[in-house]
Image (tube, rainbow, N blue to C red):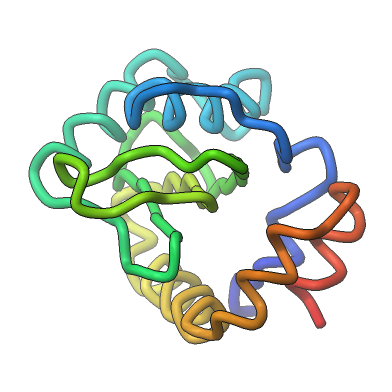
Length: 149
């Protein structure tokens, strides 16, 4: 069965008021929503892997969206959390301002499912209308409803 966005995200995994001033802080804060999840075996290592991956090549895809991610032995299942920043966070040395961060962790052996998930997200979020709707959502439930819509 394919992994879907709605099967991974719950309201408690969506932070609508990120106040992080830097990319690293935003990634850590969003990933922090996953810290107590049973699927995350080593949270500190997972965060380090997210930041290392981001430094190799930005995951900002335009439209104010980024997918910080790591293929990692630190997670036993695919996990995802979302952070939204009204002010935005600079990615790629200030070349892009990101308002929506979708932090994703995947076990190394689940590459196919991960790629399908990221493809689904990318297709949905290339719509500037959807991104604007997500930025206007007043609650995590509304955010998820618009994302699923």
